[in-house]
Image 1 (cartoon, rainbow, N blue to C red):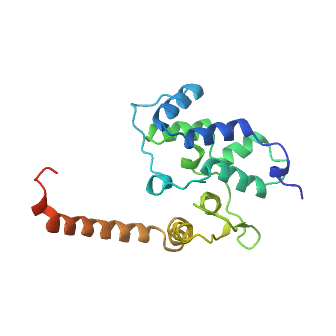
Image 2 (cartoon, one colour):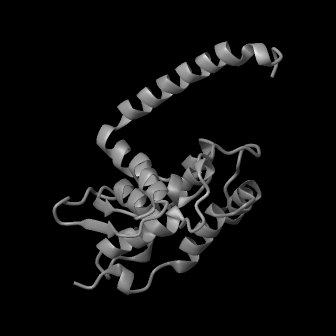
Length: 199
C-alpha cells in the first residue's frame, strides 16, 4: 500500500514550523507566527522547554519535521492534507489552546490527534538516531520505536528522553524532581559559607 510520505505533503506548513522551532531567536519567531495565523499571544513569554536546551546537538532535527515524517510513513497516500495536519496537532483550535496556555504554537507542543497504532504492526526504526527527534516523536505518536547510535552521549540521551519516560512514566519525573530538590538543599548547606546570602 502506498504511503503518504510517497505522495504530496504540506511541506510549506511543516517547513515553516520547523524553521521557527530551530530558530536561535525563538520569541520573535513565535510572535511573528501568532500574527501570521491571526492568534493573540498574551505577553512576550512562552514556556519553552527543549531537549536542545539541555544539550546542543549539532545535527538535531526538528521535532515538527520528525513527527510529520513518522506519521506520513504510516498513513495511506490518500489521507487528505487537512486531516494529516490535524492529526499532527496543527489545527487552529489546538494552536489557540497552546498560545492561551503560554506554549509556543508549534507542532511539537501540540497533542497529536491519532488513534494508537497496533504496536506489533507499526515499528519505526532509526539506526543513527543521534539526539533522538525521530524516536521521540514516534513514541509521542504511540508507535513502537527502535533507536540506537554508536555515540555513547547520543545513546544516553536516547535512554533519558525516549526509553525511560516511556517505561516509567510520571514516576520517573517525580523521582528526578525529588532528587533535584535534595541536591539543591545539599548544595545550599555545603556551599552557603562561600557565597553571600543573595547569590
